[in-house]
Length: 327
Image (cartoon, rainbow, N blue to C red; front, side, top):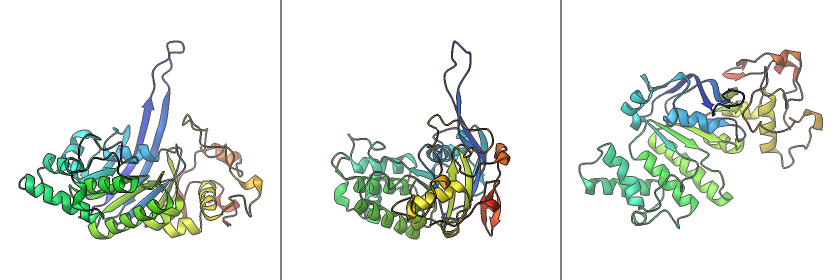
């Protein structure tokens, strides 16, 4: 049964090695004061360019990284620290970005699916666990014939179905998917999208999907949040954000997704400049201001999310001055 996922003021900072010359310890604020809520049975898509902190956020929620600050709730259970997460490990499952790297290449698919059942004591005996593994494969569109196979030699689409089946094995309440359609061809992408839609309907899961493809987010999610350099810059109902983006960064993403030529119908001066900083550094004030064509003196202060419509929020000082029409 699905439960609400709630994240409150979550931050994750990575610290490097201290320099013996400057005695300075470099740090990267990968996730910075993120708050979001996903209602039971709904799907939130978190979108943004590579390097914006999306995967770090989902890995922190999954417990792979320890949060620097903030709290994470599944239903009424606080799973912010590792001891609490161990008690609720079954509740949150992650489908990683690279399915092959997450599977033991020397062990069979049978082992991949029955191991979590053994760890969590699901199934009366080994034969019951194997029957459940076969059922899981059928639920994701594969046959029991895959049980004795090794991951090597299987297609990306088949491996993606296996890792989804493995995540579903322990009957989670929350399913986190990190770039489930990245680096696959269009045919495989369509199959994965259909698989995820079927999983959403069949298992009544609360889902969070990480993607840099805003058109994929539109197909799969009820709500959308846009992340830039570790912060949420816009959020709301998916169709509202897609059809009427209010933040300049979201406008860029939507324009790129909807136009064969992202520059078509736009003045070159209106397009964001440059790329996401590779070192994860933040500008003073608005992190997007170095790339934004609408930067003004007010952007020296950090913007906060504010209402820009019914159930629609954006973090930009100059929303009223920016033309929100997207070609």
